[in-house]
Image (cartoon, rainbow, N blue to C red; front, side, top):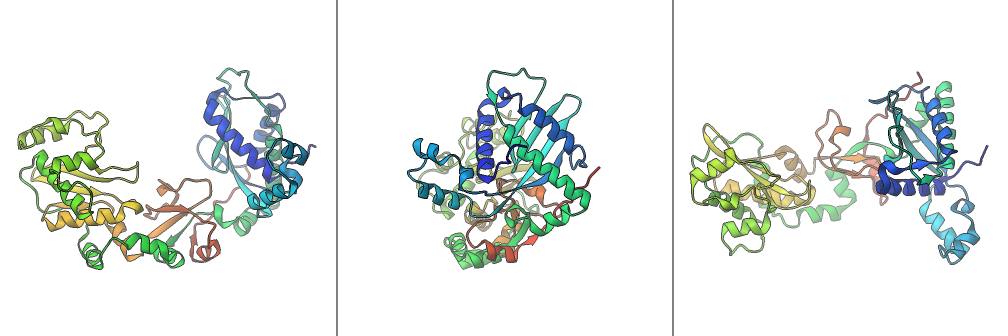
Length: 411
């Protein structure tokens, strides 16, 4: 049997296949050595009980960092200019692979009707086989990478047969691959600079006022009439409270300075007409606009102020729960409250917990982007996530509450 590759080569294949897949997508074709190995890999995996839709199966594969020789042929690496000396290569190898052992989550799916197969390693989509697409002239030799996966799958199946696999994973899986929670206070005590960064622009008076009044409940009062200029004016209260530039301008000018700009033609209506605003609000055709994104940002890092109406009138809903927009949202909400406006706040309870430092933060495994991970915490309401950092990792791990690791079983 060919020699099994180690962590440096595995890392190379993962980066290469990830980048190649992003570039060529369905155009990837593998060589004559790779396909039989993929077939054998799936034949072994059929011994394992599926754990999700589309015959999904999961196993934890392992490798060690090997020796410096596993980085590649040293003479070739130096000749190609990758390194100037063997000492530089060794320093690189030790920096990139400081641990002796490495773990990789293998996830596979298979559609037996169409023959479609997909392989994920370390939460990255790396290999795809789809007989419905014609093979191309771009040929990739991934045989030694698949051979490593096959070798490890066989090891896992042996451990499952012996009844040791699940205990081994539960007792030895590194913390960076686990899912858990830590309170914001515990995290701030380890990284006090993060506490200072969050609260530096919030007075204790405003902090306590927000904790006392923030609510997601529907406001009892309503505005009986509203215009576009009223909406712009409400936005200007939040801009002023946060020290935004341009507060000397008209509220409408401030809105178009700081908002997303895709306003669904709000700027086209008579700004002083209640009838025009009501018609725009209730009858407008959605064209992909973001009229409520009043403080522009990314998909999860903007602040929105929505206007809604019911049989009693109009009310406002403020939304901005991203950690980096927390204080802006707090000040915006207080500004509207202090003007006596009917406003509710999305995720009010979480934002209060954030200021009180009792909020739970979700720790998600390495390889998962820490955004939109709510589904990983069933039974808990968590909206802030992060990967386990390398810095002070031991201290953080001591305070984490880890979720159970799903057990794997043979069919």
